[in-house]
Image (tube, rainbow over all chains, first blue to last red; front, side, top):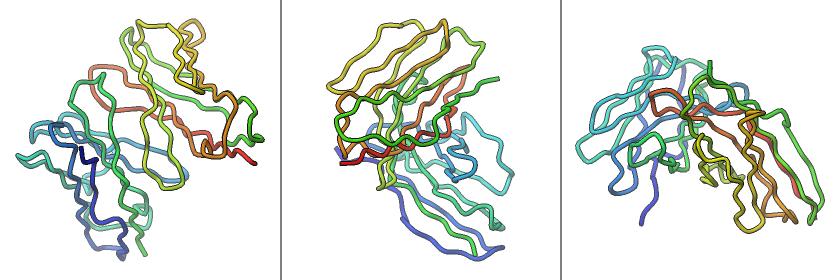
Length: 113
Length: 114
């Protein structure tokens, strides 16, 4: 069974630009969560989508948004990039129940210059 | 408030030593789930174990074991006879409340030296 895939793996942008990251969950999984990982803040929850609906949202500004398609693939978008947005963005998929373990993709390393 | 504390930032051991990684959590919910994940240098988080709040049984999986104690709000992870391949950052995480987000500790970086 294929794992969670994320594209692109690496991205370099400049301040003010916007970026879109993509995540394909494990086949059959309907829940996709996004996390931001930085050395200073660790792993922080961004949002979770289930059946195309956002179910949970973390404490991030409105510049961070996401969506989920009918095939469960998800995208997250960051507009008006800031230097502090440089991070590893991780996507995780699961069946959707809170007890389920989440399976993570390799992440997208975003660098904002 | 929900919180996970991994007090050990870095641990360095010599191969074959036993090592315990500490995890202390905070939550007022009676139903919650605890997880451990491993993040090797490649960066991909690997699921290790899940434990729910109603199951305090300790668990052993090969060289890995977990000690869950509700009385001290701890969920510690022990690696017996450590190996170089165990070198990674280990994260403890909590799911509590009626949502599905994970609250993470800051991780413990384990270096196992030959």
